[in-house]
Image (tube, rainbow, N blue to C red; front, side, top):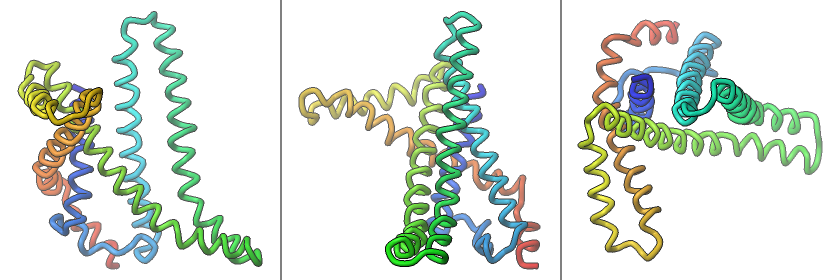
Length: 224
């Protein structure tokens, strides 16, 4: 059940970003960029990022725990501790590096000359493109993982329909796949269909969440 809740959350997050991209979601259309809105809006964005990271971390640990249930308790604890260290050092370390990269570039551009200053300016100009790319890839990953969690865990609860339908679609496409590529095709079909399912589910959840948790007060705070 925890994994299903996590799948719903990831589906909602992915769908909301896609709806915002196509200007379907009106909850954020009046918001200013965080740098213009002030520190309060920036704190809200950081809080949202932390919430998403906590959910993702909990999902990773829950999936890892499901894979080691047959191990001795102390081996389970050791494996989970190692995974926690890798997640903390790897994922959050990379995020911290990306967040500070433009500051490094700005420092080089202001305090250095020649190649170092040019490199700093190039780094500052490159960061918006990198963040846009990461946002797109992150949204796709959330949809894929969220949909996968919903499909797999729905089957574990007895609802095998979605999983069987995806398998049927993949099997129907085996005839056009080159030899030895059927395994990759199965994975690709599952990834695409589960991501689409996540977007559909998330699009249903988004207006419900917005109705229960309206953002109007935040917009007024930003305008002030």
